[in-house]
Length: 359
Image 1 (tube, helix red, strand yellow):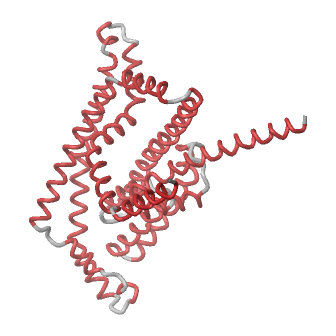
Image 2 (tube, helix red, strand yellow; image 1 turned 60 degrees about the vertical axis):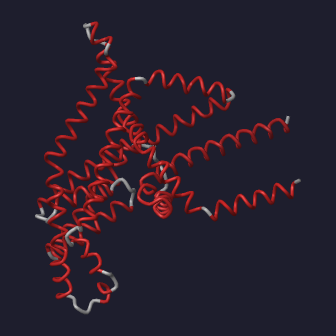
Image 3 (tube, one colour; image 1 turned 90 degrees about the vertical axis):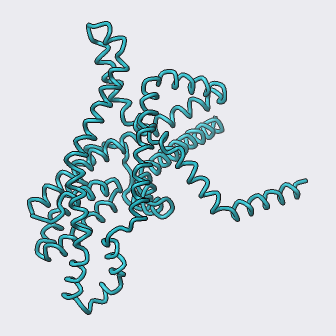
């Protein structure tokens, strides 16, 4: 009987590995289907605390109608603010960003030609397949344009569904929380339930601190870097500032990559003197941000060794791409916290055992 079970397990493992590509494809399609709901949950996660505070504020009103509809009014207020922010971004920020992007990509062939004429025998430049990269600036084919439009339309549709999902969750959050609370009593023992709630609270604390802190710090990075580049008269300042803000979500390596990219673009578009000046100013700002601004915003919630952060980011990027690089730090922080608590509990248990033996 054990031999039969062992053989069956081997067959299952072999078939799983043999169909690994199909399995990952199926998993990708499954999460693609769930993406609107996942996006909705993310929106709920971001808007929950502001909605709750607004609901309390509306609940203090002297008008009975406002008190009764406090939750609905709080949710509608937050979504109105969110809609206003989206309209402002689409109206003012997106056109400038697109204009910078089109101008930059259309200028790549000229920049490439200028560099090759200036450094014709550079072994370093020859090691890159720059002509293939330049082809990205060629006019987009009709088929590619159609696919891009379809992908964009699909993304907008999924985002709308996600917002509708988040709206229902925020309005009915008490009933949803009660359901999961009752379900936990049914499927878990009291001790396991308390432990699960404890870990979920810790996870929530870490993830929320990371998202909120990094978002605030990234906005600061975007504003400061864009302003610095405008003052230094660097081309594509708005585009490069946005790139720097997004890259800031990846600890250590993101800022380093952003400064390097901005310096290279400035070297190509403005010359060595401007590139060196830009690089020095940005490195000084990144040091100030990493030593004072970010720790002040993030607090001690994500206190973790820099080497471990770099390793986590590299591992996350190697196995899960850009998303893995973004999520690596909170995941490692959570695992570290759980491991430390387990080690502390084992130490307490061992000390208690030794004390009992000594008695």
